[in-house]
Image (tube, rainbow, N blue to C red; front, side, top):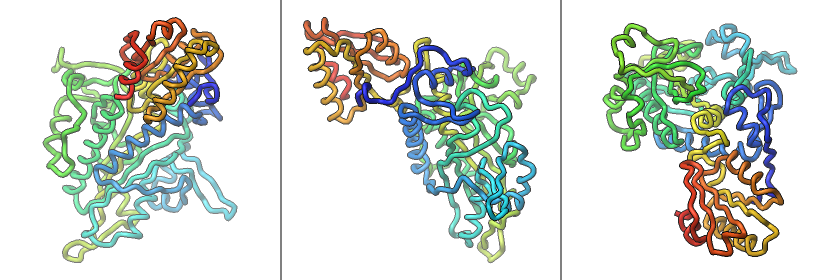
Length: 437
């Protein structure tokens, strides 16, 4: 992609309405633009990152045996009345009346709808377990939307739902999602600490939040120091093994969100407790038969008896993760993307497009990288070198390949690692070999 043709409306100054770093940097880097309070358009650079995060989330859900569906954004109010949540959910729910005077709503979550789908489709315990998920836009009418995509009104979420014959099998499903979440965050370049959490309006009696540490986190969390040193990637764990011992290993130490903290435990831990700011990036729930009883999600058991299925739900805020990653990975110059989600791998900078040798070398490098399937954005604009460096640091690509007239005369280019900050002058051939690895 040539930057001279790319829609990348960067900003030099911090927007006044942006309160947190991720919001400021996303606006400045031309990733998003606000449509109305808490609602954003995703521009090309931001959408590339969003799609990469979505793909990683989807890959891990598929790997654990989850099946993807797609449910609508607009839902009938009747099923929410059956569950008892239509009035309980409060003003965050956007309620709609269609032309036939039917009560509808813009879905803030999908427990009711997916339970109705299951109830109308599955009849026997032999068809269990069922694990279903979708990645869809949600709407919650926050009274004070803030922090950009971190707490917007419209957001992209992966929400999943499990259906099991009994509580033991439901716990097995819950454990699979627990591990899948840890694997997902590791693939995104994040360390997410699992913490016991409140169930909130979803309901149930077992719940975990996954939080990443960031100085600008929304709330203060506390955990045993070993969590900060623990390998939470779970890459060697097979979903078919007994996962309960693994879950125990990752939850046996103290870790608590702000509303679950215990001063007595923290005092007893002494120097072993660590406090920090945390950002929630996922939440999982087990709520038993709360929805299946009310919405008729029942199957015939081994003896022909009617059994209400045990359920859980599992959410990852896909669009929220974009902001969370930036909060955890940036410097005073801009974003520093983990390699897995960077919009491009390489930023190729031509310091002087009027210099024939410089431009010939850049064109060849651009074509070689593009032909090899390397995602590269080529800054071929007529702009000052300082402006090019500032924009490239702002958008935070893992590598910068800098080509200037002086270096070309001596057969060298500069290769900069945005993550480590290291720079080296090497030949173009060596630089391309490094980038193609």
